[in-house]
Image 1 (cartoon, rainbow, N blue to C red):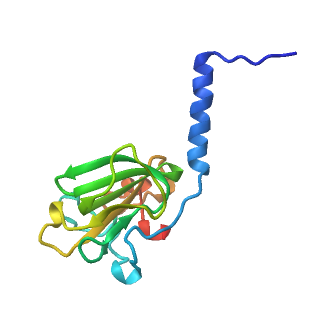
Image 2: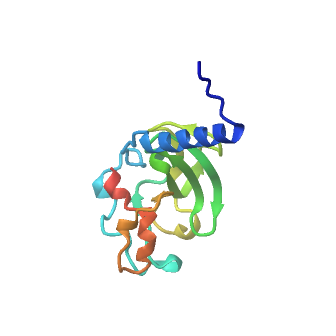
Amino acid sequence: MIRFKPSPIKLLLIISLLIAVAGLLLPATSLVPVKAAGSKDWNPNTFWYEPWGASGVHKGVDIFSKKNTDVISPGYGLVLYTGELKLGGKVVISLNSKWRLHYFAHLNRINTSPGALIRAGETIGTVGNSGNAAGKQPHLHYSIITLLPYFWLIDGSTQGWKKMFFLNPLEYF
């Protein structure tokens, strides 16, 4: 009988590979991250719109709603960060299937914490106008960032090389 006994390093590599592949194979859900929002609540032309303040181009979509409307997770994931950033205000960042980061900004309240496992449809915060959206209409700024570059999305637009990482959220709901 032949016995397979990998070294600890090989075992760690095998487990890491299985986790990486599992992240790619997990099904992605396509929920709009603002409860009860529909296509009338965003402008489809704002992804990669320019000029857009300090960032140059708008690397996400703004979904408008009443202040304190629930912001929900579009899929199953792990919360990596919650806190305040200068531009984004109160933000949540989660890692979901396909090794994609989901960035939720301008929140009024954060209802989750780092390390939390979240499910599709779970409330993670509420719509607000924090950060550089202060004084503006309440909305959620929502971005999807892939950790695996999609080289075929690069184009000649301003900062077009970044499109290999920033995905158009409207293509996912």
